[in-house]
Amino acid sequence: MDQFTINLLFVGASFALYIGIAIWARAGSTSEFYAAGRGVHPVTNGMATAADWMSAASFISMAGLIAFTGYDNSTFLMGWTGGYVLLALLLAPYLRKFGKFTVSEFIGDRFYSPTARIVAVICLIVASTTYVIGQMTGVGVAFGRFLEVSNTTGLLIGACVVFAYAVFGGMKGVTYTQVAQYCVLIMAYTIPAVFISLQLTGNPVPALGLFGDHAASGEPLLSKLDAIVTDLGFKEYTAHHGDTFNMVLFTLSLMIGTAGLPHVIMRFFTVPKVADARWSAGWALVFIALLYLTAPAVGAMARLNISDMMWPEGTDGQAVSVEMIENDARYDWMATWQKTGLLGWEDKNGDGRIQYYNDKSEAMQEKAAANGWEGNELTNFNRDILVLANPEIANLPGWVIGLVAAGGLAAALSTAAGLLLAISSAVSHDLIKGSINPQISEKGELLSARIAMAVAIAVATYLGLNPPGFAAQTVALAFGLAAASIFPALMMGIFTKVNNKGAVAGMIAGLVVTLIYIFLHKGWFFIPGTNSFTDADPLLGTVKSTSFGAIGAMVNFAVAYFVSKSSAPIPAEIEDLVESVRIPRGAAAAQDH
Image 1 (spheres, rainbow, N blue to C red):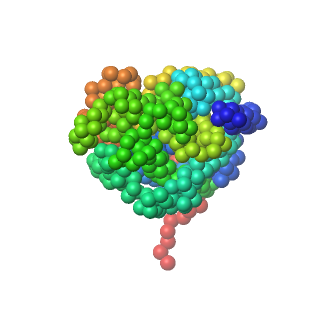
Image 2: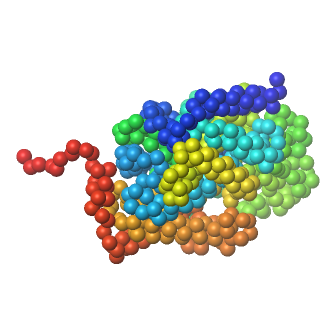
Image 3: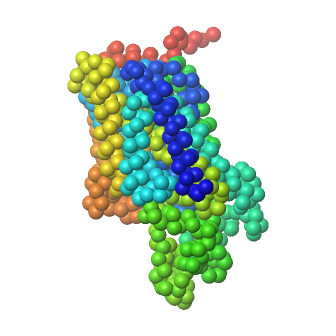
């Protein structure tokens, strides 16, 4: 059986499972559509949250960014996992106790203002739409490879699949679909990692193999990798090369962005009790850790395998020949990925070999001149393909490649569905029912939610055709927007007495300054060529667009505080509401014994 047929079997079986679950768990009421009837067990919810969270950015893109950058991109791991600690301790139980369907509904009621609710909806849509662009980018990469079609065709096919099960299932269908998707994606991520770790280190646990010895050379694996990448003119893999201030800001932006993402927070509205919300966050962190502890090993081992394949005789020998790439079965993955437009090479000097090195390094430029090389000939290696190509690079069995195909699609589709549900809920429940037409029927509200989701899919697909960066980089922008707009409003709503004017001014200020900073670096509305700066040469010192969310959050807090102080205090009933959310019922004041 050829690889294409194996891929179709794995992907087809997994899709049949997802759509079957969506039909079985189809939402019949607004409670089931928005919050799955509030009857989801904490462990189930934790697994669904993990699938909702571990998107194309985590599964497909993150290890690729780590592989080609090294230690500096460990910020993705620290920021995204650290955010769940904030979520479990500071937000999830209080928001569940409030008892609403959506984040915008909480903000509108807490800040006793329809305007605050509408502003929250706008912030949610902006952040979630940016996030969906990253997911659809991953969907296009995965479908393009495993259906052996162009990236664009893969993106359009993926959009149709998301529409099929997200629009009809609502939160109830999405929850149980995401449980199945988590099982698929975690097996798809860890099984190839175990195989590759055994090949390279003899250790079946990838996280331990990363710090073990390279089986072929007897050297520590990371020392071996450092030696190879520096020989090719790249920066040392395990060292810190970037700006520390930007690194701290980026990590903070990812952390508070995690705690402010509406599609993740919505998951904690689905459990029966307040205590279950905290347990759900804990279980989600456990399930997420299974992948995140493996990701650094996947990145490092893949980078080593790629370097070895491009220099089969070692960095002191000859580069791989074009004849070997075309005729050796171990290199078949290169031809397959070339069809997607995400991998490319060119024999620039006509010597019949493909030299892969850092042609911007002065030392390598001297070596290239001496050897007659005319630049790096691995001209295109999209970071988003690395995890999906990893089992092929390592020559693993066909069924493992098929499993990774299903896992990559599960990761991208699960988060896309959660985000689209957050967008549709904001439009139908908060905007239409909450502001425009409060008398709308339940049937009309469900219809408007599904129409909003369909429109969101169309917009995300269009923008996904020309994203502002790799999947994980695009997602990082969404986290910055959530960090700057939604997280401060939630924190102030629970723990402070900020009034409605302060909250609205803070959200608008945080969102606007962050959006402007992103557009200045990524292009206005992500249109290529309209940017004035780049992340390599940013506007403010060393602060990249992906790191600005933390500064936007500070702006939000500051504006909200000063505007609130200069206007009327919150009403007594809202103060009582805040106290009731934050303090357990029946709790008495401490007594001196």
